[in-house]
Amino acid sequence: MEHSAAAQTNILTPDVTMVILTWVTFFILLFILKKFAWKPILEGLQQREDYIRQSLDDADKAKAQLAQVEGTKAQILNDAKTQASQIIDDARKTAMDLAHSIETKAKQNAQEIVKNAQAQIEGERQHVRQALKEESVHIAIALAGKILKENSDTDKNRRLVDAAIPQL
Image (cartoon, rainbow, N blue to C red; front, side):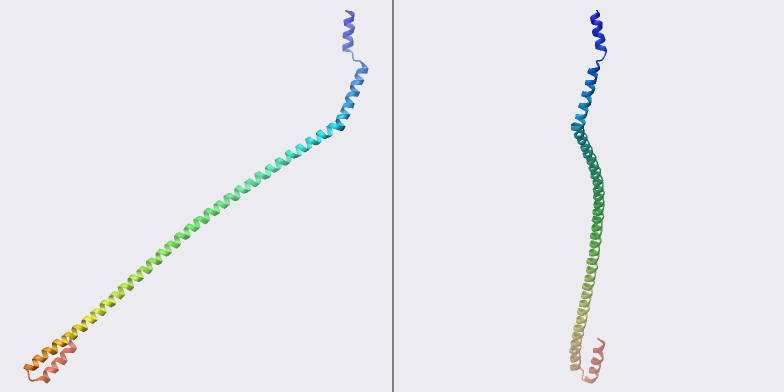
């Protein structure tokens, strides 16, 4: 048991040489890691952090651009709707003006046709009156000739016929 008690005390008591060697090994390893590994690791982490930060900035810029594009798209759509509405209104106005113009021209043409027809009717009426007057004059002359054959007073009959012609 003594042997085990001494072994236990050796296990629990540190050996100074071993502690110093452990610390020297630790610091040498720390120096080597700092000199050769720590800087590249930190630089790699810094580069990665910069890349992530740049990616986040780019994503924010892309979001801003997307929002701007969406706003522009909405504005373009509104402008297109406004222009389409304006074009439709202009087309309707033009169609209404054209229909009104056609209607006005049709009314004018109808009035001209009616005036021409009335002028033709009046011309025919005058022609018929003239023909009727001429026929009446012929009949009157024929009657006067018969009367004159029967009647010897021709001067009196001629005066009657001459007076009757203008009245017809």
